[in-house]
Image (cartoon, rainbow, N blue to C red; front, side, top):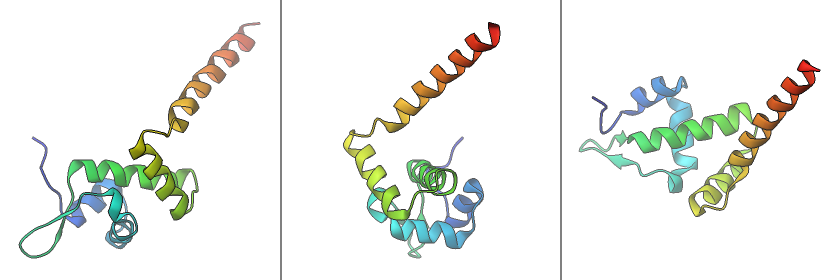
Length: 105
């Protein structure tokens, strides 16, 4: 059974990141996260927060985007106006299909 909330150390472990990195991202992208606090004022991460942090990690680490660009991308995604990922997936599938056709010739 999945947990309702995770501590910052559990979240860092799930993301394979340092606690300081998760805390930094939490502060930078607070408007994109729905962080709660427990009675000791510790951060509580919901599964949706962890998914958002995974997206942040992907955009920063794999795509090399700046923090400002990541924030804009997350805002566009929340607005429903970001089709970039969907278009990219379609193009990658098309590329793969074309490569298979070329290989079969």
